[in-house]
Length: 202
Image (tube, rainbow, N blue to C red; front, top):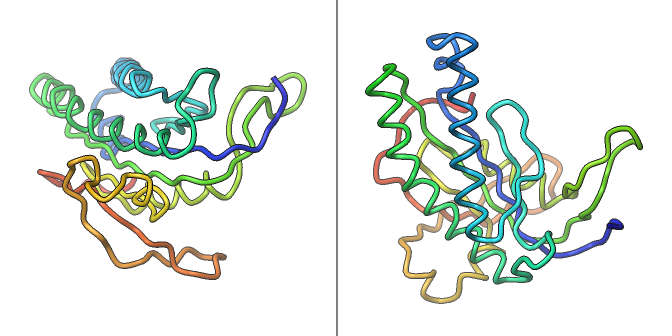
């Protein structure tokens, strides 16, 4: 498949508390935690036409609207928010189990932005894989960095795609985010967490 420019929603997901969990669990336990995390994440986003593009440690990049047969345009942005909401709900059960069995406390921070990307196989011939790149990806990453455990932060373009009723979800408008290197502050919105954990952004 050739590279192409499209509009899609990009989600960054990061596990909060991972560094401390790694120290507690040791290598075998970390592998088990990550495999359970990835399985849960890929399963949930797949139900909303999302596709994992990159996994680095406990951070995952997911594209909505970039794969064959996926929702496109603003529908992809709506599905990304539905996926984030479902992911946090399912994570509560997963995290509670790990806390009960191993005294490991974790949470998820999520950032989403909707806009143009280059999608397709990228990289040297020996290491090409389908992914998405561009400013939209960078902005999603910055939003994820700001999100606290149990929180979804998303941009104004995502909020606009949700329509006046916001999919029936509770949405808070936050102060605009000034991102280094960008001329204008970024409008920012939030699906507030029912229980926020102060676990940092590791």
